[in-house]
Length: 273
View 1 (cartoon, rainbow, N blue to C red):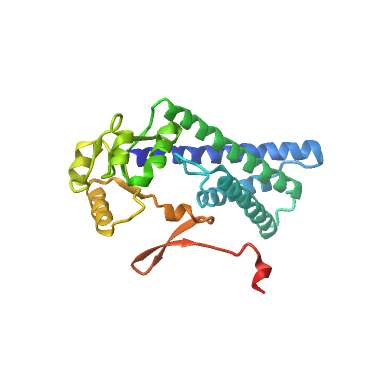
View 2: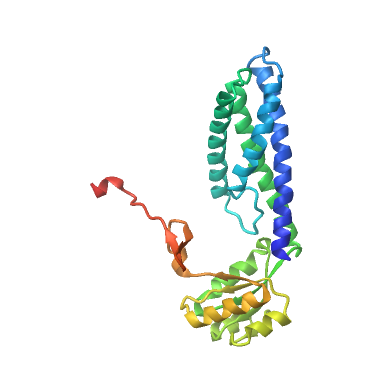
């Protein structure tokens, strides 16, 4: 249900961005005509360009994270993606003008439209996300999670509790750690073993399972993933190893194997020479 809800929100925001693109297109035309040249007149070429760019724009935005409503967002990454999209999108528009010989369309219009569209979509994304964050603080649209924790996960659990705007509600903690039990048993349901996880998931309303132990036990993880697959519950792996990396990790495939890929570039390129 949570994933379906996120898909619906993302689809609605996608439709909104298309409408916003049309509005900024019209606004950019009028601003260019008012501030840069009153000789610019509307022609069918502008309509042709609009019809050409809408599917390209939507496809380009769908390659970024700007059409996806997440519970936790990194605005710096999203802003970088939106700027890159704007630069590439402006280049595509110049290419369309040249390819179809749309001589009446000014360069100023393309540049202004690209900037206005980027700023409006990014600002709208923040506004929509802030709205959903306020709703989650009030206890709406929460994701129920089970955390499988070890001794060193107390701070991670506390961060989730201290940030209700993330939208995660911890319905249960499974841990053999006395420290974790002492810290959270008074407010959260506790279990010690994951052996009966399938039945636990079926008896509780659970959307996701977080495996957070620093000492990853392969057989245990495999059984948990299998239990989640049986019921259709999402599985997340939180590891301190990944947080040590300064670069953003990606998940890659090597034949049938999954690999965490961290792109590392030396801070001083000249040191290699």
